[in-house]
Length: 110
Image (cartoon, rainbow, N blue to C red):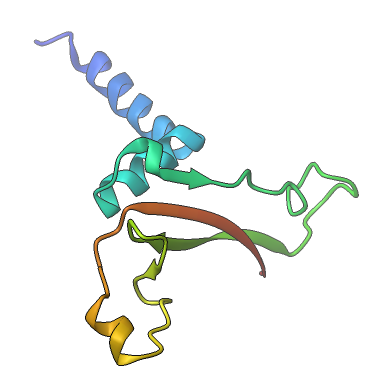
């Protein structure tokens, strides 16, 4: 009988807790991998506490904050689904490679 099974379950539980309560550094690493940029190229605004259960007044506020991800290329132009392309000259000079990721938080109702 193998007595190492509790260690495996504790390791799995630790991974699950790390993902659930990982904090901002976990989000930074997630977006860095997703957009193939360095960790120092991901900028995340602090999440507002307005919808937290423990924020006054206590209780459910009927809202939550969702990430609003914006990506920029090396020249500072927005790239991706939200990027506006205005002219053919801009289209010819368009660089779709993501260099910086910025995450803002937008409030949504439940």
